[in-house]
Amino acid sequence: MRFFNLFKKNKVEEYVEISPVYEGKLKSLQELNDPACFSSEALGKGFAIEFSNDENEVILKAPITGKISAIFPTKHAYVFESLDEVKVLVHIGLDTVNLKGEGFESLVSIESMVKKGQPFAKVNLKLIRENNLVSDAIVTVLPESNVHSMDIVDLNGSFITTDNVVIRVKK
Image (cartoon, rainbow, N blue to C red; front, side):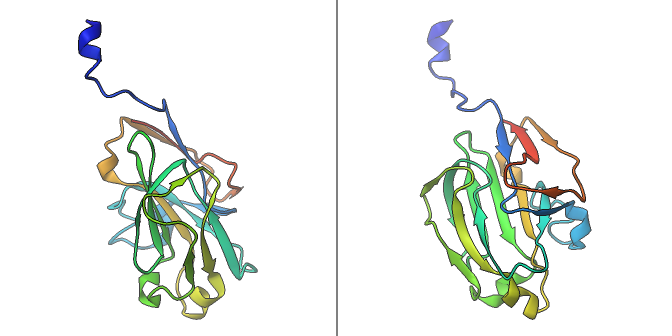
């Protein structure tokens, strides 16, 4: 029986714990009022973080330990992949792709390894707001992750920090 276990893919982590990328007010995806994409959970289940209105520029931190598997050319969205192949999308704002990268600075590159809490992007919130765009940071577990179970902590409306765990995923 041990012989056949050699060909099984070993799980690296029992759970993948997903944290906010910055401190702020925790919101449900439904509160984003973006039915075509995030509110409908077309890009997976998750949460949003509303930044404080007095923040002009923020440095976002990795929600999980893993590798950067994608960075959108406009630097407004990143995909993190855990060792167990759980894919986490971080999308900054709604319709921020229209800024064509202005106001976004990437601190990492594709395929680089990151630790949870490591800075990965600098964002000019003032510029996003001046363009009348929603600046919330959106974090979702992408559907192609094929997770076994997912627990989302009910902290809606609470002020949370990057030390909090909002989603716990079992692959």
